[in-house]
Length: 222
Image (cartoon, rainbow, N blue to C red; front, top):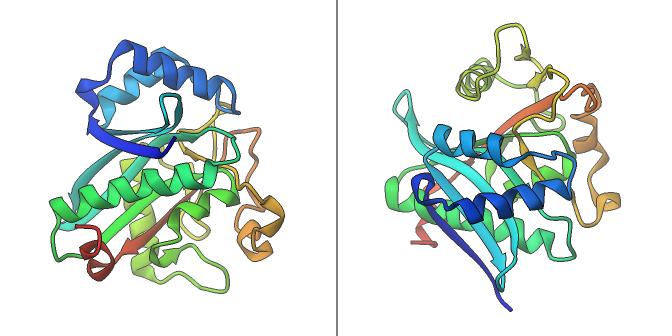
């Protein structure tokens, strides 16, 4: 069966879909339950569901909004099931969000931001330009300012975010991140892994990251 992604308003989520999402999380490290997922449905505007045939293989809560006038796609809690098709599921999820972005923000570059705990999550940003943070790049003042803006938008408490390395300090629970593990972790660039070197994953630390979906790229998806 073909992998298909569908994005809709969170208000249209059914109880059965929330249960499917909780079942998917139960098989991964997050163990998020229906109650928390319901609260996320209230906190975010859109939800993308990715299926391989009928079974749910991935999902993401997200929103399209302007931050200080800049168009943005923000991805909150998201999870990809650890299957042999996980990379394709992640790609389908992100492409569906990009298609939403080009409809909402035609002819504009769009910032895409989320949080990761695993370097494999950076595979979600393969189509983006000027990803921050990235190896061998010293973030500019404006890039660090964007990190602070995103930290505030993601509800990170003051003092829990380091704007020099884009890391957050956890509260001993699994963070609300885009949870994805690479199908081939041995192929992940060691310099990308190094960005996560200071994280205490058991504490629930995370990395805030963002990049730009350029107008030329988005136009091809319209």
